[in-house]
Image (cartoon, rainbow, N blue to C red; front, side, top):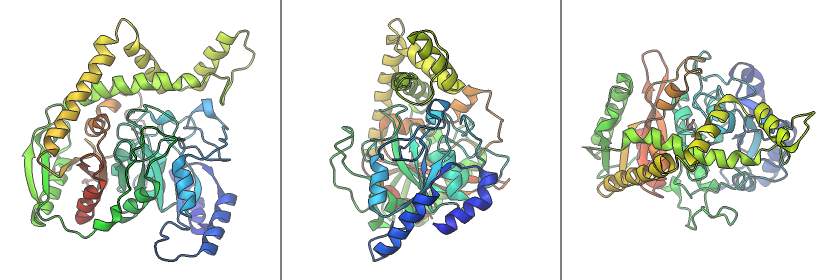
Length: 447
Ligand code: GLN
């Protein structure tokens, strides 16, 4: 933990991953970890970690990178934070993100712009950009992110680390500031597959406080990390090899496919015809749920409150106008529109129907295959400022991640080499519901 703070002091002035540091409390936690000891099976004890700032932490500011939650200090821990504390992990501090997890570059934070750990002129991805950059730059050993449409996997890919979006229902969302409740999942971001599997074991499991968390025994995800993939059936959707996906990334996926074949896996081309409908369906559903979830930020109950107002209505309007950033307002408007009486059937309902078709596509493939292999992103990390005033271009980048959240299946991004200009490429492995164990097994073999 002391080394983590030393590294943060050296690098965070440049990377700007942290929104809040928890030094005094973290050193106490580390001391307690030392006293508890490091016997076998106690693997997370004393491990310095960072937490995305939309996960509530008792006594430590939690802003979701929004002005509307400036200086907000929760009075309880999210279930995942509680579980990590119980395992002895040390909470070093809170990590930057896109405001309310809306975005793909961490440029939508009200507070600061986090940089890519490999090139400070490039974005770290988003929305869990701080969680990825902190791990990739060696500030912490691991972090937690959240993934609604790619926010763990895309920044993991952009920073050359491992990021897992678990099955919807695997990890409790209690204490995760809601963006789109039917899509959100918390997951681990780490330097390697083994750490990732161990961390997911620690945060998974049923929670009476989240009625969507599944009552299933948590398997030992780290048990099958033996490099064996012989006989595994891996599907390679042909739609991934399209113009929008950079040639270098397509090559990296083909290389991974060849590696799997060499190790005895069976790789076959399949089709995923609904891929192209993911982005429109996702942005309608996610924005609709967000417009509803964000109603609670009214200037009365939490955080920022406008001053010198003359009526309750003016209090709501001014607190929200001043407290929310541009992208959040765009989503609230888009969502309110899709849900409105005159447009519900044409947008929200239609998006739900498309979601069913997407689920069917995955079910069809998983009827014959163990895993789906593909790229995580269409390009490597782009320059800071490059897409910031073009929201549609930013949305289009989510092509390869959003259908996974719509279906609710688990997926990991693992490092898959570098582009010609030295930026990391991410390879994505998608599994059937609650088959994270298989994903880890294959991801480990690729490592
Ligand atoms: N980039 C996507 C969005 O802006 C995904 C965000 C996320 O997963 N939280 O909605």
